[in-house]
Image 1 (tube, one colour):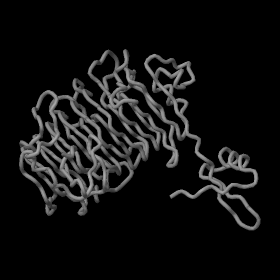
Image 2 (cartoon, rainbow, N blue to C red; image 1 turned 90 degrees about the vertical axis):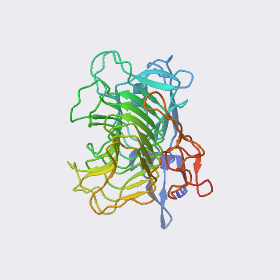
Image 3 (cartoon, rainbow, N blue to C red; image 1 turned 90 degrees about the horizontal axis):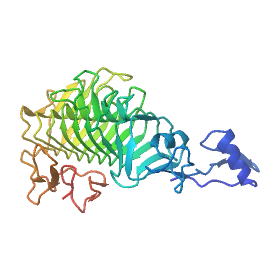
Image 4 (cartoon, rainbow, N blue to C red; image 1 turned 180 degrees about the vertical axis):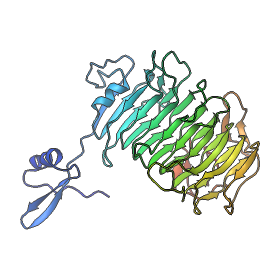
Length: 388
């Protein structure tokens, strides 16, 4: 709980002095014989982006910007950028950081209404390359279908910053016709290469990623501490969810992964800043169905990784491949009974009433499923991205 600010005799001067001349966390002032903390109030602002706007505009609701890139050039901590439905050119980088108390939020005004597409002549290999910290990217569609010219996208949303949240986005058809090379790509990437750490990847729909039979392109790729929850991932050439490099203490819960080369890979190696291993990672309440491989460990993994209450079934080569002595518990080995399923088209991964995944999940912290339905002790905990 935050502490209320103590207001001195001249509060406006004091707050401005603290905010602009001293540290952003506040400053100390003397009131008689006591020393008291003055916490400057966060100034929260809104900016707007719309297809009919102009980057010469001030970014207000009445006069919005035209591009997300322009809005990102003027944001400050505490700013929410509202992006109206429509089509926007991708291939941009965002670098400004928020703070713990004043995050920067990029928000599609309708879920998947703001669509990011390849530019005429692409100069980057990512649709959205975020290097800022304390940033939220919420509700966008990233559609790499209609490539025009220049560099082909290898990544949909790439994150190199810290304490960021990537939520409720739809990322698809990225890197389908690129060469299979070891530098790879991903639908959503959370990377420690630029010293990024602690991220959330929650409630995203990621599919059709990477060239056929290429193990270097993944749906969701993580190389740091993270929470990966309630995502739907399918038709990925590499792994649906892949951990490597400095990944550790990753919470992989409530996801549905299907029709991919590998389901979930827990691994560590080729370390950037740590010495490994990938330890204290939890893989629970996931459906991993109809991939080539199910859930496996690779590289340097620790003794404290846990695999609990997953439905793992019909993965062609193997369902499990864990390190010697590692056990999985509460596993269900039956078909998940989705509403509608096929390896092509758009499967419906919701659970039918006869699904063995209903009520069989491990009890976790209260949260919401892919559609926003609550998961609590009262509702029970279903396995997979959808609560029945």
